[in-house]
Image (cartoon, rainbow, N blue to C red; front, side, top):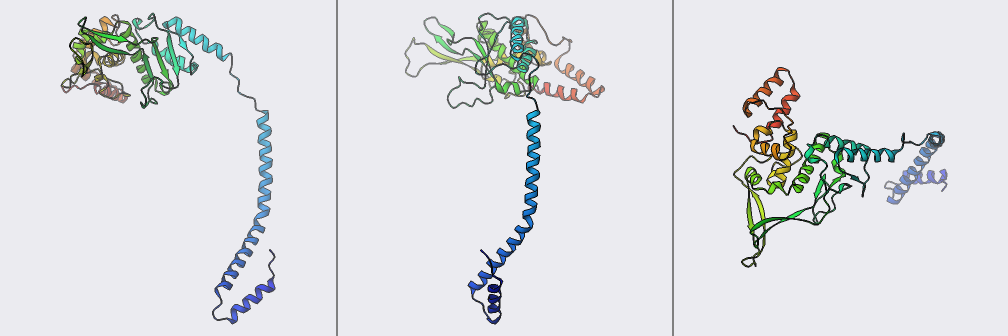
Length: 351
């Protein structure tokens, strides 16, 4: 569209002689004025756009040429051979095979797992009958609708508890599955301390299974304050078998201490979780022998083969904590103060 100055002049003269110009004339003038302004702005901006485009093309050509010269990353050595060697070393040292299924094992994951297993007692290693450890992205064997993204590991097989009337016995019936531990991706994003705690927890479950469920032994049920509750079917008849469950005592405060990742009530779920949390506490928590002396002695004699991780001092709980506090305060070890407070806070001890 080409604007003729003569037409604009006539239109302006018409507005001057008219006291009240028509609305359509006003709109036409504004439209023409806007279009003229846009043309001037575009004429001024166009050279800059052309120059900028030229420089952009020149820069892109330079980057493309540099990218073409840049070599691809090459792993120094045989990546697959390194992983296979790490897996062979792990099996030779601890007795378990690392199996690639959905996910393949990475070197750093095997290194972290090796560090975690190096703190386990000999009784947890070379357990016969275990197929191996699997690596999945997440738990697949969960009930429908159960959130699984935050689950780091799981131990199989599962079990159910049945009271057999014909034998007057409480039976733990293990599912027909291959014994294994499944480790999931989220585990390897945890801090090292948390990762090791989780691995030790799962291995305690494994040990418990292959020892015929020590967690269901009368001695452990008494120590851990669990009792058995019968769950007969509503339409059952006398003499029928039925399920039973272990329930915690709400009047008891001292269940096994838990890690910072777990809920405080985790050990109250069942004797198996209390047993596994007690095993990790035995390895990691210096005040466990004082806060839970019966659990400690049971694990020392029947699980850890006498192996201890913290020396005996002969003090009681209160005196040991006070002595540790005085030492770190004297040394101005503020991280030590926080560490002691955290360890004491794992258990309810109003005294």
